[in-house]
Amino acid sequence: MKKLTLYILLLIMSYGYSQELNLPVFTQYLADNDFVISPTYAGIGDNLKIRANGLTQWVGIKNAPDNASIYGDFRISDRSGVGISAYTDKNGNTRQKGVKFSFAHHLTLDYKSKQFLSFGISYNINSFRIEIENFNSTPNAPVNPTDVPDDRSTSNNNFDFGFLYRWKAFYLSMNANNIMKKDIDPERGVEPNQLLNYQVYSGLVLKSNDNKDVEFEPSVFFQMFDSDKRSSTDVNFKYRKFNRKGDYYWVGGSYRFLNDQFFKPLNLGPMAGITFNKLYFAYSYQLTFNDLSGFNSGTHMVTVGLDFLQGASNCACTKGTSQSYYR
Image 1 (cartoon, rainbow, N blue to C red):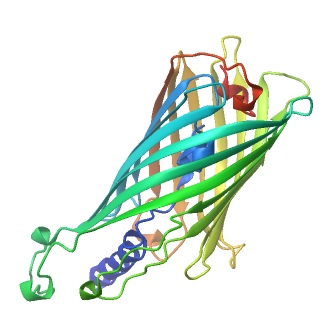
Image 2 (cartoon, rainbow, N blue to C red):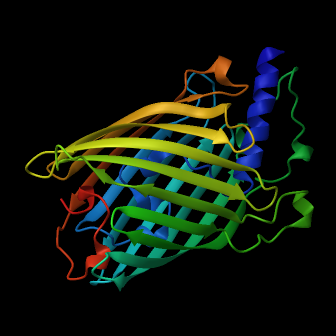
């Protein structure tokens, strides 16, 4: 009975996220890859930046979510950048895949005070499928083939839009994701058609007074879904240490909570990363505080990356707020 209850809970959570064709944001954006958050970051920095993420959620629970994703962005002129990202997500017998194409343009508001404004847009293609061929009928959980007559697959095309404001070491990104409603097939039953969600990402890169090669970066990430107004907030902190060659390591932590339950964390965990000769590696661990916490040992995420084709822009508007953008 305990296992059956756990399976039902996993199925409900899978339906709630996957049917919306919008995966929850984890801490992969903290692996020095702000492009995960917003298309406005495409082309910022001196390199073609590639990051690949592998995430295993709720380790210890059978058929728990697994996610793999890859992101790449680069500058195509002094003031513009493009990017592409793709992901695949496995959650029990549900499969979700998607690809996103992004474009960003960067403007200089005031050169002396280092104020910049960026605009970005993304075109998204997502697909969702239930693998009914893997359904196993047992005496305790019988499956009637007439109840699931096809593969329950669906696809969605949508757009994201955002802007990014930077002033010296401060940054503020605001985004609207999945701005179009989803077409609904009435024969598939009740499912949400409003996928719109809003994200705000803001932070500050502080230089150490004692060591110019040390940075501190507090940041906040807020996400709200327009359909039911549910929202969450990440409070993050990172410490970076650079060497003479521009390589660096960083350590930090993240605290996620539902906005109506500030003192009841949803996720909490440390993270760390290192870059050496344009190669990047990071690891993040999240301990989940919910009804599943007693059944698993947490969520693990690994990021590997590569920076290459270095070339400085003639426009300051593509310079990032951290040294990590222009090593």
